[in-house]
Image (cartoon, rainbow, N blue to C red; front, side):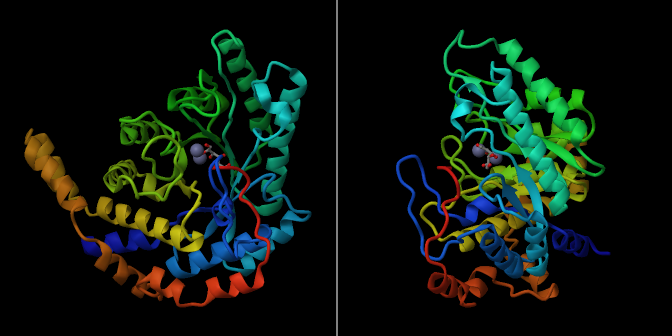
Length: 386
Ligand code: AOS
Ligand code: ZN
Ligand code: ZN
């Protein structure tokens, strides 16, 4: 296989998971702008997700969020997905929306609240069983707002205890993906604030527990690709929540603010063998002011473009320059790949896969947007702000 053929072959295997909540109405704490034609239930969210897959060929799974996607019959939901040509991806838990969780969930000082939170996580594993989902994705809003509010160390103990109970419940081939976030909604301490804390818990739990890197969850200036390289080296990178950020957890379209950062991340993924492993490439975004399905198609394409550039890095030339201590040449090798216009390559890849080379245009002219606007009255809100 020529090198270009290998790059194309790799791109054809790429899968980006889209989040069910990105198809629903969303906004900030100031305002949710309702859009016409948005899904009214989880089944319709899957219908929209199937459109993204139909035109990109690269979005075969859809993440669910419980309770936003709660249904009577999860097997029926999974069957509906399959009928539309997609599958159920990660199950995202929600231990942040109930009044009971004012002081936290799994780290709450009251054992009864902790019990409720853990029971919810166990319910999510039941849903994984029913839908065939592989991953339980955990993000905890737990933390404190004021020094002294609660004991930092005890909260870690409670976290470890709760996670261990859920870990034990995981079946064969199921994973627990633990997400970290620097701050928000808690502003003084967050119980899983960084990759180190997530890693420490996952290491103790065992090999089914892995870390999720949400690209919006870091302090400005954090070198995310270094974290990616480190977690991959340790076999602990479970996946990504991709989105882009200008300021904090903006949840905008991945690759919008900083496509170069996305390229650097994807380069470390490729370099560390993560592209061909079980690393899950998930989107965690909301489309508050832009049309949702096209924004998700654009996001998938942004990931594809960054990946194509990462795959084009001339590894031999880079290794030679690095070994020779040729700083400028090594940097030039990387920048050459980044500065390549990979859109023609991706168009070819799509054509070879029997797809329209221009997913955005193809979606716009397919009539789906007009159809759902006419048919769906009273679309559902995604769940919460962003
Ligand atoms: C919150 O900031 C996180 O990014 C989570 O991944 C969250 O759980 C997700 O956005 C939806 O559940
Ligand atoms: Zn996330
Ligand atoms: Zn987030």
